[in-house]
Amino acid sequence: MNMGRWFRVYVTPAAVYQSAMIGGGYGTGREVVEYFTMQGVTGGVLGLGVATLTFALILAATYEFARCFRAYDYRHFFKTLIGRGWVAYEVVYIITIMLILAVVSSAASDVLKDQLGWSAWLSTGAMLIAVTTMAFYGREFVSRIMTFWAILLSAIFVLYFVLVVAQFGPETAAAWEAGGVAGSWARKGMQFALYNVAMAPALLFAAREIATRREAILAGVITALAATLPALLFHLSFVARYAEVSAQPLPVYWMISSLGANWFMSLYLIGLFGTLVQTGIGVIQGLIERIDGWRKDSGGAPLGKPGHALLGLAAITISGMLSAVGIITLVAQGYGSLAWAFMIIYPLPLLTVGLLRLARARTAT
Image (cartoon, rainbow, N blue to C red; front, side, top):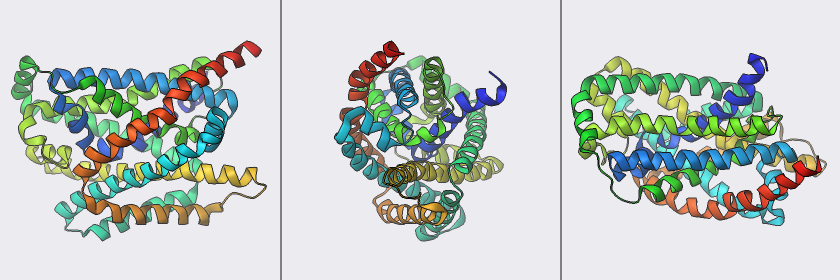
C-alpha cells in the first residue's frame, strides 16, 4: 500500500471523525469533566478504557458493513441494516445535530465574548459564514480541511498538556498518587462512546477508500484511538485543579488562562474556533450526503452547491437559538439521554443482525 492510499484509508476516516466529535467536548473540555474526571483520577482512566474498546468494536463493524454493502450515507446504511426502521436513526440524528451545534455555538459564544467582547449573535454569525462556505464547496473539500485541522489540533492539545505538566507537575503527581474511583466509570465510559459513535454512519463519506475487511478493522481501531486520546490528555491535565475545573463551562479555556501564557491562548482560540466549525460541518455534511443519496435514488439530481450552503445556513441558525440554554446543561442532560436511544437503534442491531449478515456475505464470497 503506497503512502497516499494508506493516508486515505487510515488517517482520513480517523481525522474526519475526530474533527466532527471534538468541538462539542474536547475543544472545550466539558465532556471530559462530565464523563471522566468526575469519576475520579483512576476511575476516569478506566472509563476511557471502556470508551476506547466500545468505539473500536462499533467503528470496525460500521466500516466493514459500509464497505461490504456499499452504504456510504446513513440512509443507505440503515435501510440495509434495519429496513424501514432506518427512519428512527434519522429522527434521533437530526435531534443530535441540533444539540451538537448548540453546544458548539454556546462554546464559541462564551470564548469570543470573554476574549473579544463579541455578542452571542456575532459569534454565531461568524460560525454561520464559515460552515456555509465549507458546505458550498462539498465533500472532498470538507474531508481535506477536516483532516488537516485534526492534525493541527492534535499538536495544539499535546503542547497544552506539556505546558500544564510543566506548571502543575507536583499537583498532578500528588493527585495520581492519591488515585480515586468515584461514580459509575464503566457506565459513563460506555455512555460517552455510544452517543459519540452515533455520528459514525453520517461520516462514512470519509471511509470510501477502505477496500478489505482487514483495512476496515484496523481503521476502526485507529479511529477509536483518535477519538479517545485527546480525552486522556485532558483528564490527566484536569486532575491537578479538579476542585476548580469541575465547575467551569469551558475547562480547557480556564486551564489555559491559569497558565498565564498569552501566546498559547491566542493559538488555542484559533484552534478552538476552527474545531467548532469542523464539528458543525462534519454533522451537516452527513445530512447533505443523506439528502443527495435520496435524490439520486428518486431519479433526481443532488442539491448542488447552493442547496448545500442553504442547508448549513439553516442548521447553524437553529442551533444558535438553542445555544441560549448553556453548555453545561446541554452536555449534562442532552447527551446522556441520546446515548441510550442510539444504542437501541445502531450498535445493538449492528453487532447482532449486522455481524450475522457480514458473516454470510463472507461465506458467499
